[in-house]
Length: 324
Image (tube, rainbow, N blue to C red):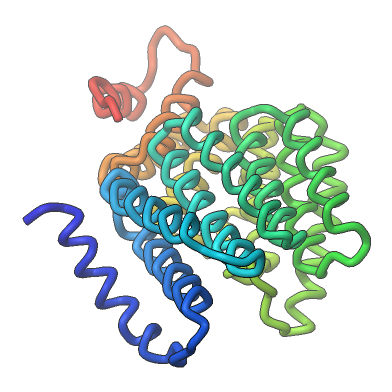
């Protein structure tokens, strides 16, 4: 049975209960947009347990369908609605490309998501997609570009931005400052982001679309671990590791484990670092994640020794010959 057929069946099973609740409407394009958005959401749910390489072909087909429907749409409102749907799907395709380790395609997809969001005329969606691209650039080590994009996202929203947007953008800025090597600014952004996240939790208001997940203090803790790994600050990477590891799915947790491993390595705890890195690498191989494997290689490059201990030699043996 073909992989796309299997994924299609799983997707149908996941989406059926949701689609059953969508009201019948004479607004054909509106109904199509709603169904397409639900399909994107279902693919996102599969992401946590499915290798990105298996999802990518199906998502490409989904995007082609969105493009075909958009070309036949009439009226500005219909095209704007479908552009927003296309922006979400392109952003997810960018995420999948990033997980595969294909930065060129990821950057192209994220750029397409920003362009489609602008076409939709929705400033909140536009700011979200620009912020997502900023997050990608920060993780890629392009701190200045990440900060410029985060500031652009703020300008799109002006002063009317929802609280979750402000809290999230602060965390993105923290990543940008860390990528640029600015510990003080990263710390300030993280502190402000945590305060904003705590206020969000107290309000107990659901996040507005396009935020599909709540932004909590746990996510700020995860961001601090990542910033600590980037800045080689063991205290940042290790102080909040338990809290941070409550966030995300298996692939995301593997990346956090590698950041924690980098913290141990920066603190001189080689055995602990590579015990953790080996666990994360196994998850990367299980899900065939190029991003996880490359991050594991980065951790390894940070250790230079002529006589590595057995845990490092075992790690090297496991990593040798891996091409994703």
